[in-house]
Image (cartoon, rainbow, N blue to C red; front, side, top):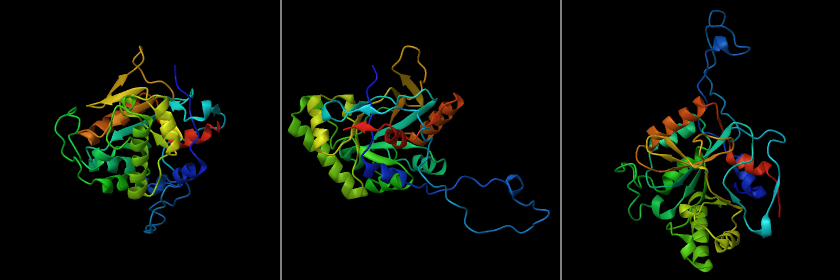
Length: 288
């Protein structure tokens, strides 16, 4: 059964909606632009800077596309998908080990909407990354500077704990230290406080929700499909296909730029659009 959804706090939403891509889309030939003069009649064209697209990247929800939901028991709801019939899916990525510059370039230049869940030890390269995908080339290459590049490219940076423990094995106080500590680090390094939290391994309990609430988290975000090396999608449904509202989970693994390109092209070939997760959450007004 799919989980419920939430509206980020007004301040968080305002921050998301203020994000601006750092790169404009490629200029089309002047002869094909509405209102533009042909090169024959106007040999000299303006050399001024091209306008930068405004607003967050990705598809925005249409009026009435998603319905409001209530917050059960005052705790952050757990979200595994967005309730829409539109062919739109949402990209998320966890940890921060492999800091591939080509991934940032794609997100920025193609204005691809994606939400990152940063884990401190991965970002700072403390410990050993998951061996899945092979040896890394960019492990900890930019640390928090890399995540500042992602933020500047329009990526919302959210919470994935400090050390990636199995939260079900920890007390509520210990869980709170992991979640609040991560939010504090992200705010210090990036200037924004996370509104979303993703529990490591998808493991959580009621204590997790209580701890998350005390740390200012608005929602716990899970997923409906994972992305494996090579850009392959591992589905959690019997028919093995994308569905409207799916949330896809990637990781900062080796060959990230290559695999990400394969994934995005595959999604688009299947007729799906990439949605702006924050905008959809904002459209789902929540009774507090």
